[in-house]
Length: 153
Image (cartoon, rainbow, N blue to C red):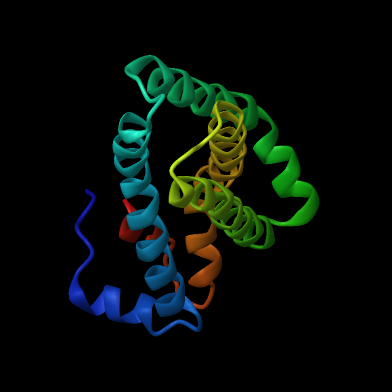
């Protein structure tokens, strides 16, 4: 019978090297990733040429890029390592987003910039999200049990 993680187990997991940093970094990243579609929607609709059609097109491109990346994620992870690729793709997604931020700050965002930046960002995030849960057991190698994945669900 499955039981919930108790406080003792959580403290054992968090006592592992790098576990606290990992969970704090994931919280910050997930918070930003969760807020970005909301900010994007308000940003696109506030543009002089913004419309629901442009918002739908942008979100459609991001979904398509996600679907394109998912089948290749495992191959890339096996070749280069999950931890390294999750860190790299999250960092690249954040950096490419600054291109869009620059254009939104000017008040004029070309459609191509919206589509390319959001498509590439989602392409990167599709990889990191796909392999994130697989990193938890690596963080808790010294523990006798393999239950740390429940902390991220």
